[in-house]
Image (cartoon, rainbow, N blue to C red; front, side, top):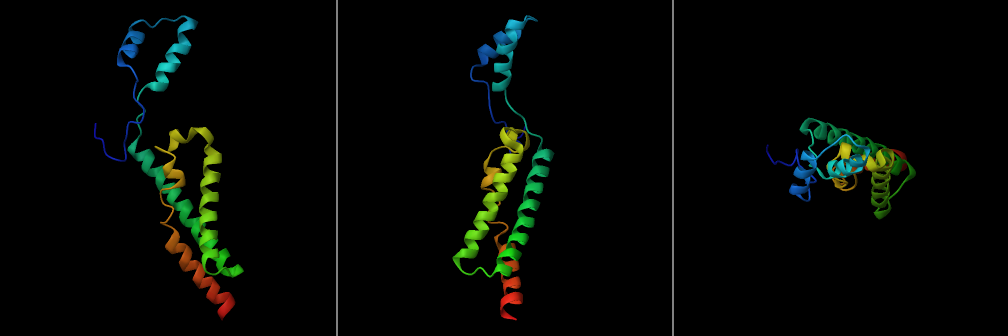
Length: 143
């Protein structure tokens, strides 16, 4: 298995002997179920490269759309200087918070880490934001 950035193994078993011994001594009793669940939580998590790319692409499209929308709003209401950049930071943080709130604690099902939601791609939409911000500011307030 390759160890590139798209497909990663996140968590590994803390003690391989306990995993092996529990697999050999597994029974159908109800008392062993919590033990097996604990072991399952420590087993490696494999990510599908296609699914991770699709989720990152969807997140990037959301960020681009919010960049366009917030750039239009900032231009129309006439934000200038650092206030416009603070508005961009607020809108990106708000989007990240909404996505995290929507998926809650299941972020490991969709992304390899929380950095993909909050940090990665934060500055990718900045140029799009500035383009729409200046265009609409010029159209509304200058001409």
